[in-house]
Image (cartoon, rainbow, N blue to C red; front, side, top):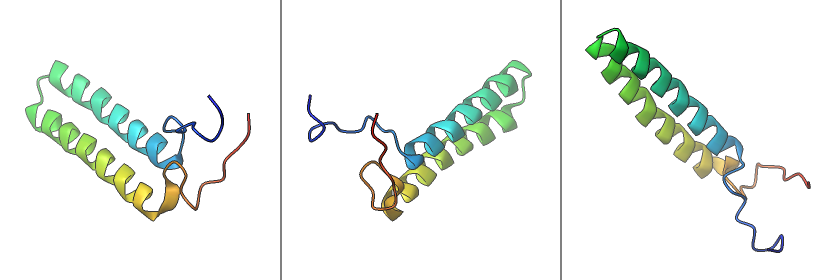
Length: 75
């Protein structure tokens, strides 16, 4: 695969931020479920949705793969 066809595999600030927020939400939700705290489980689900929204917004303003604010690094 040449560099011209490499999709980037989501290596961007937007994707890293979204995945990090979603992982934190899942950890919180797992512990909340384990400790029988339904309000916190739902709060963690909301945080996961917020992670998706933050990733989408960051992509829209140029921090996604191939965005104008992202500096690509050669390997």
